[in-house]
Length: 307
Image (cartoon, rainbow, N blue to C red; front, top):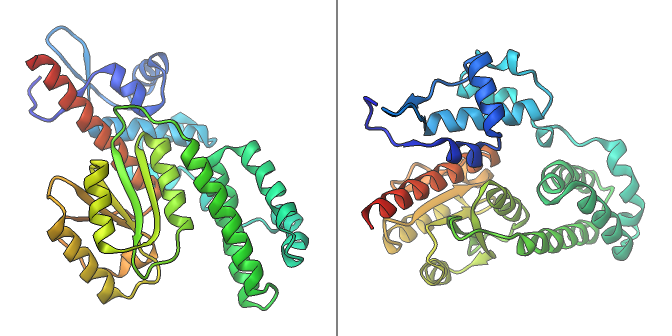
């Protein structure tokens, strides 16, 4: 095939992109969305970059874009063009139904309203399209004096419990790469972490959620005991110097074969650290998970041939 780059068969492309084989072939024939390599026998082989492009195209089309308007875009433009509704600002009209219950601290009523949304939307859309804008609005109203600290704590506690429950209920496959999700000591914010774990699960990972404010020794032990391939840390309010010191110590203590991923607003303040990957957003997280699954599939194919 004239290339030493790892490539993957059609069945892997179908699984990793969410496209059917028929739709993928039609897009290739009508729109030349990618140009797969060919084996001597004529079978299609896809590069990792082909699979990312196909996944982004599928997500953009699912979001309402026409495939004909997308085919000329590169990967960067596709990521921006996808127009995920989760990134939109909160719609006050959608959120108004919960404010009376929240201001009165009516926990049972709030939970019932949230559960209705979760059931209707599914875990990850609920987290991205409802929870994220809701929390932005809660923060704004708290800052303006419209909500009490108790109300802010109540909504955070309810949503955290629901998202963790949804995460625990997610079924994983033996081929899904295990990832430990946590925040280090001094970092108490866990809602974003849980949303990231849900996004990773949807992308094909096996998340191991250990929660917030986890001591360094316990982080190392969690990775070792779970045989995780990745440690994913959320950073929000931890001071820059403390965060960088923790990351450097963890990188020294954890074997090089185990990757460290960081995300959250606090991760943007950290200087680059060798062996630590900064994951900018949930879409990039999904891409990283997809590539890790591809690597596992490729290794599995090699192991099968050697047996």
